[in-house]
Image (cartoon, rainbow, N blue to C red):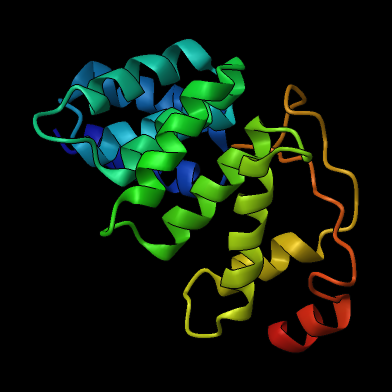
Length: 193
């Protein structure tokens, strides 16, 4: 029956376009008809995080982390986001540090790990400052694939929504005080151009 395969494709599309609530509904249909692949479980967990369905996200992340071998950085990222949403700050930071310590982690995964640290520490802490400094360093490195994401993050001047408010992003981060001495808005604009 081809119908469950169509559901799977639709669930992946919904997840990757940030439509978490609808994606979760489709992932539940797929899971009732087919065995989920590792990639399916990652997208199911991501959709559940977007929809703030923490019990569903927890089930999927638990299955991902229990796979043989050490966890994949993508799985650690999902685990860090789940821990953040649950308010388990130290646990979330631990997952982020595992990503940062992994030499095979992609630059964008390391960027997200820094965002997880920012979301789980106070601006006056050393961990926060170090994560923020790594984001600035990434933003200034034109050869880094995460540079545009880092620049975009630094350019945000509006106050973000609270972590518990509905949102289209997996994690909302309290923005640090972006002083001109760190990286100016002009420099950000020039680098984004």
